[in-house]
Image (cartoon, rainbow, N blue to C red):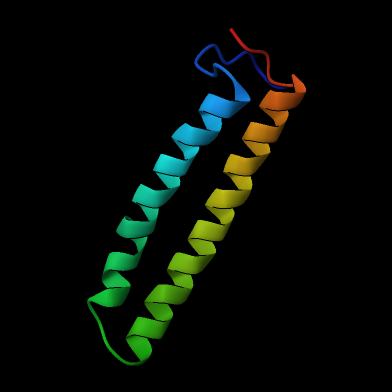
Length: 74
């Protein structure tokens, strides 16, 4: 079992919060990519894509575990 996390209200509200977090991190992670050109741009955007993929996996996993009740809600 995962620890008790009292700040998680419901899966629906958690999904909205995580959507806002994901959109903000998308902007932050892609700024260096759009500030460069050529091969450096491809490298920066590739790194940003990998980071966003990992972040999305973690956030979706937390929402699913919350909706299934495996992370206790306070």
